[in-house]
Image 1: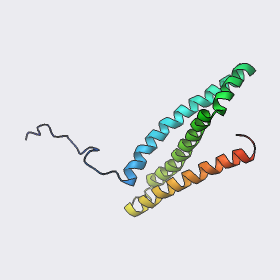
Image 2: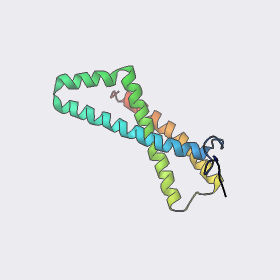
Image 3: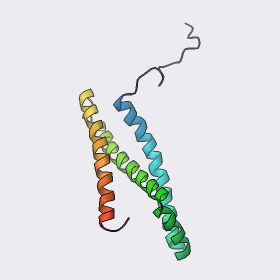
Image 4: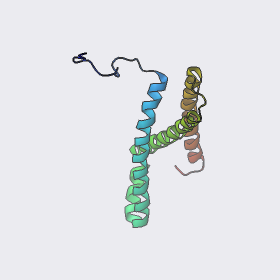
Length: 130
């Protein structure tokens, strides 16, 4: 049998995005974003250890609108990765694998991600830390 130039398996151009596939892709992207954010955290800690001049430079960058946007994105990625990771652990236990339950847990991940992220930022502003 000759397969010609056909792909070996269906690809992203064949299937319409579904909630489960989109969340799976986002899980990987957010894992990378969490890693990048962790590098920024290490940069901030190294600046704190380097002395007040360099720390002030890093603090001014992270306090700018762009720095805060980066920190918000890191928080969002971290919380999403945590919530979706809990969902995956639940699946690893063999629970919640039915399609209806998978969609419900996916929607719950998105809702909890937004609520927890916003809650953390509101709390940070209320405590005067941001």
